[in-house]
Image (cartoon, rainbow, N blue to C red; front, side):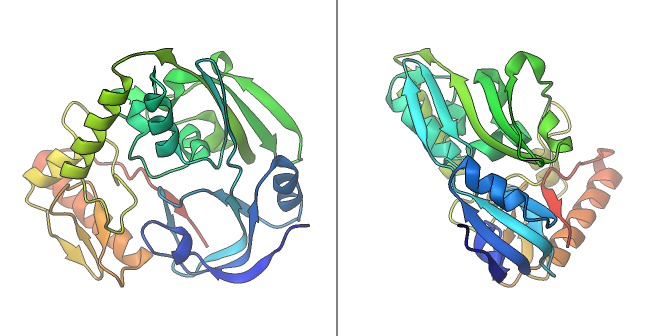
Length: 280
């Protein structure tokens, strides 16, 4: 039987540390519990690490489901993983086993479900590249297996973004490689040196508009350190916005609009916000 909590602060479930209370909140650890939660009759959202979403300052007027479906099974060079499993840990675990294909996941602060949902990527690699299939639960509670060949992915986009339900698990096919572990370690060193780890951020805020990265364009416009309220552009990487402790959703959105305006005026580039904005 699931435990439903009232008025749970969403700041505690956001890597940005931003958000008001959820009307209802619960944790699920398997498909049966996910079905029970979704069929409560409330408007709902499913979250993992809360690393690519911006909660409203008023909170969420419905049910927030925290995904803790965290199993991880390996058969040969294939992994079957629960959607609540740490995506960065999966990348590290596979690389340590001498398997290549998910090294880029190391350091990405999200879950497997979130990575599939957003088609997370880095360094020219995307989640869909190694994907075999996805087990999905529709709002009705029905389970369906989607084969990779039947799914259309694109840059930071998946078909699951227009569906009502939840990703339950994903299967990945990797390849043996003696270089996998070293490649993964090199990626971690690079990210810790060039990104503001340890700060309250949600990862990259804008989609890369082309060959030149969003971070490079924002830096070129002299916007590092630009601040509105409690939120500022990172001095380390300009595509990261840091909550300095008292930042709000309103601060983030105002700063995002300001950055977009200046970049459009100075560089003629239209930046696109890539974070999921969760309305009240």
